[in-house]
Amino acid sequence: MSVQYEICVEGLLGPVLRCAFADVHCEAVARHSTIRARLSTEQLRHLLIRLDRSGVELIKVQVIQPG
Image (cartoon, rainbow, N blue to C red; front, side):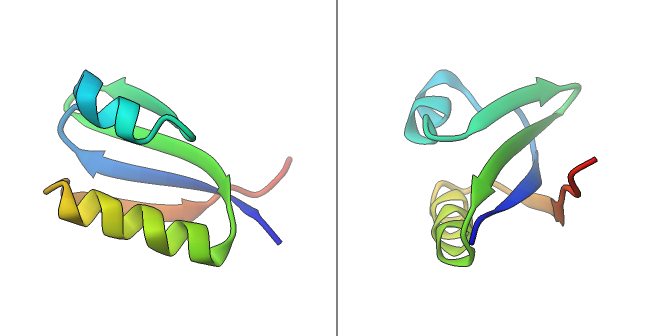
């Protein structure tokens, strides 16, 4: 089962990183980037690992409730 997540990270994701995460929606706001995606728990885990390996600082992860 997939859940809609919003993941906020520090800084702006450049074009190379945005391409690396092409399967999710990325949006830059001020000095932060927001990634929105419908993911399973395993997909979320893999995405967080990819962000960490890319040196991206995680600010928060939250579930977006349908509404």
